[in-house]
Image (cartoon, rainbow, N blue to C red; front, side):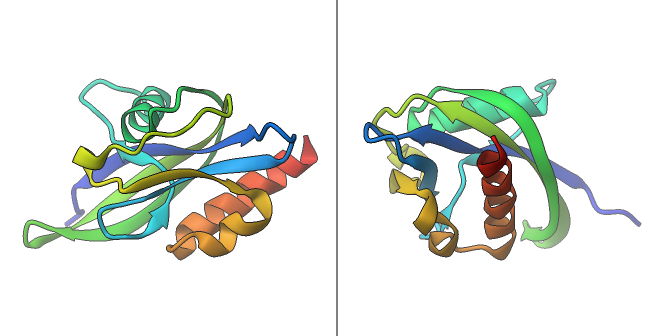
Length: 141
């Protein structure tokens, strides 16, 4: 018997600080984990639209999707049952504006982090892998 699939979308959002340094947007979520902005798809919403909406809701940052980076699938335990969650992660660009964390959504911080520090700051292994992939793409540009 297959488990119900929970679909979500988010992005590695990058920008350039006023001094020209590459920075990446990270959040601290309700579990006190440093991670990427993401969230569930609404009915009839495509992944890219969901990612843009969730980033804006969680951080106040308006960005542009550039490309799909990867999809990550992992099991989650909710409401006394195991489910599979699949997150589509995009690469997105935003102007370097001050993020505003959505406290009411459990986001306690939203900050721009230097590319040299961001991977080790992230809490989850799969999110670190997504960030490494994004940095490879960005360094090729």
